[in-house]
Amino acid sequence: MEGGGTLDSLELAHRIVDLIMDKKAYDIVVLDLRKLFPLADYFVICTGDSEKQVEAIASEVREKLEAEGIEPLGVEGTPDSGWVLMDYRDVILHIFMPAQRDYYELEKLWRKAPVVVRIR
Figure 1 (cartoon, rainbow, N blue to C red):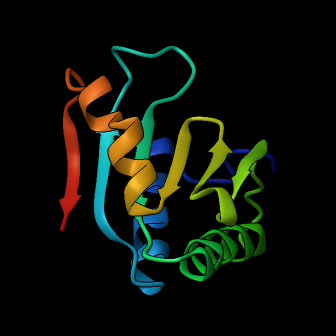
Figure 2 (cartoon, rainbow, N blue to C red; figure 1 turned 45 degrees about the horizontal axis):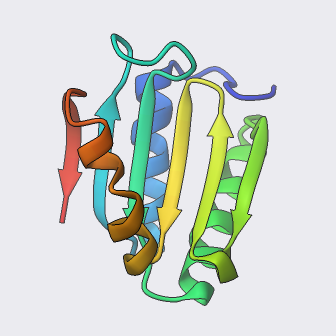
């Protein structure tokens, strides 16, 4: 099923956090956007230190969720750009390299969103 499978959006966000932690993503934040943004319930934001790690994180999430019947609606960006976005309808995963994360400052942009998870 595109975007959701059988998990609700919070469960999906937590599942994504588990998967990205398996690939050593860090500075993980889950923002609750339900009252602020009509297109998604949660943003999951994380950092990887290299193009290779960003690719590994994105591949892990895609492969494991597809095996569970959950496919992304879309994927934007590439590891060599330093940013990959994976849209799972109610949950959007942002995988950044440090420079791009500092540049886009999503946590600052969405500072009114409650933090559900923060793992440094």
